[in-house]
Length: 185
Ligand SMILES: [Zn+2]
Image 1 (cartoon, helix red, strand yellow):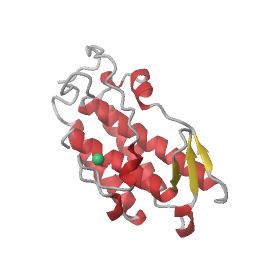
Image 2: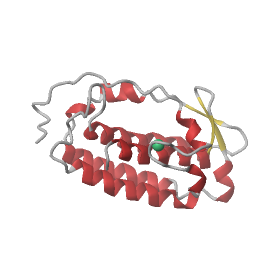
Image 3: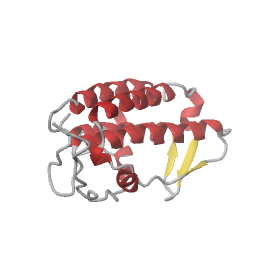
Image 4: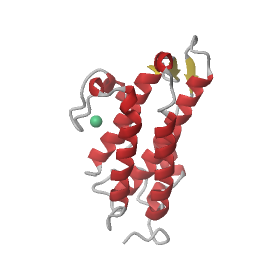
């Protein structure tokens, strides 16, 4: 059983520096996600279904065990997707706070730096389960709010990648689904 008070820092995992925006144009060969089959209206349900599956993962006895050198444990992945929900909800809210005519600039988010800073490896699985549920529900509710025309409102990430509300939603849910594949959840 994972005891957060006795956990030993395993060091940073290998950083993920890939640009995952290609999942918006072709199916993911690893998790099978196909953004072409995802409708904006279906996004909240995908988020809520993923929350249920992560909750089950967090109940595992070995949730804090890394499966290999430099690879996050399921617990660390759960912390990551919890934070992804907050970041993506924040991005959505920023776009919707604009007027839809000029692309909104989105701040960069360094997921690997966040993992180190927040010490994901020493998290308490029970506490993460509560936080994850709240974060997923807030994100699901937020992605249920855009009106029809707002799905095409746009934003530009600090690395130059362009998103609309719709592609941001599709990019976001791929992250949740892909990490379930990572943890076999
Ligand atoms: Zn994938």
